[in-house]
Image (cartoon, rainbow, N blue to C red; front, side, top):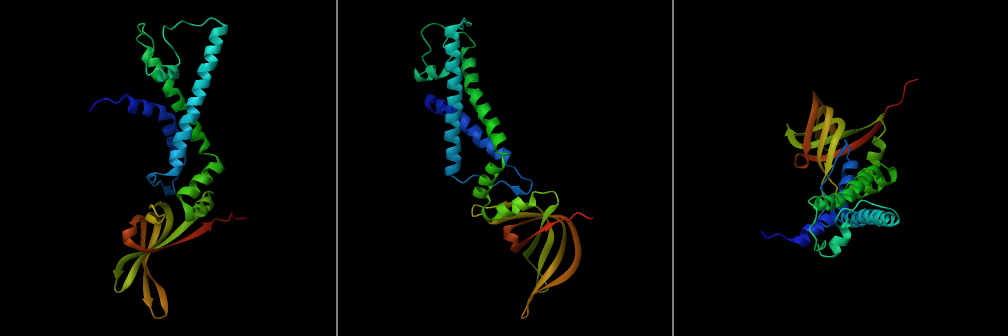
Length: 243
């Protein structure tokens, strides 16, 4: 495989944008919702990467411009090469005919790393803002976003009722428990669910409708995948302080 300077340069220049995307994704992690992979060609991800890269490089180029202005007005350390990495890139990597110091390339790489670290920190910090969280959750969670919002207080919880595909004597096996975690698929349907402190019961379908048949069994933790359940019902509970 031949080395592609253009591809390598493109990845370096897009690094601040990827840092923005990573900061937003890491900052929005939730104990209740498992993060789904980004959809291929996601417009939001593309905008975050492009504008994040632009913001990072604008900040660094402004800093280098201020540094150059200050060096013209006062004495600065002579480094023997052009410290402006963008000028070197625009000159197709030509840093001049004179020999370069051994640490010139290290300086340029560190210069390109700086905006990536800056944009990651800012994106991770911004992901904690309520408005940013709401926008991201509406985009990724859809119908589930109001439930996640209500479940955030410490005194709130979601109880899930799951009817599975398993049968026992003509009745479907079902579970009722505290919702610990769930994952969504590309269509924002529940693909996986984890329940804690759940009870197992049976659901029997008769001419009079669905009837619950108690089958006393307590399970500490259970995980179910979409292929193993028929239906899910969610109910929000809020603990009222005594007094």
